[in-house]
Length: 130
Image (tube, rainbow, N blue to C red; front, side, top):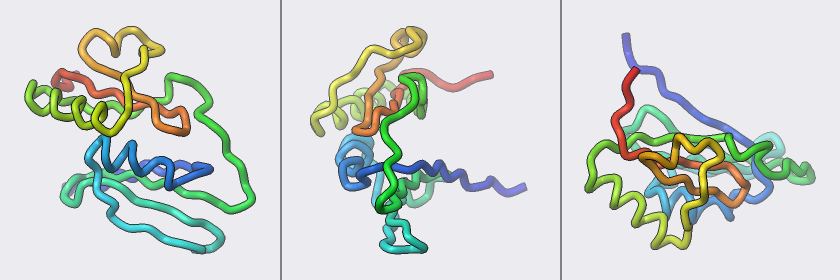
C-alpha cells in the first residue's frame, strides 16, 4: 500500500502574514500558490518529498478570525537533538518566541509556538510511539 499524502487545509485572513512563521521559522518551502481560484487565494507549504503539506486559503470579503482555542496544534516529533535545536533556533531567529502550552504535557519535552492566526505548532523533542 502506498503512503497517502496528507494536506492540512485551513482558512486565514492573511496568508502573507503566515509565510515568515512557516517558511522562515519552520523551514517549509512554498510549494505553490494561487490567486482568484473560484474566489480563493492560497498558499501551499511543505517539503518537496514529505507526505504532507499545509494549505492556507483566503476568500476575499470573508473573515475567519483566530484559532478557536490554544489547543489547536500541529505537532512535529524531532527525536534528534541537533535537529530539534536547529528547528527551535530557526523559529527564534525568525522572531518567534515559545509560548506556554495550553496542555502542560507539551512543555515537558518540547516548545510551542503560535502563528499569526493563533494556531500553535509544537516542536517535540521526542520520538513518536504508540
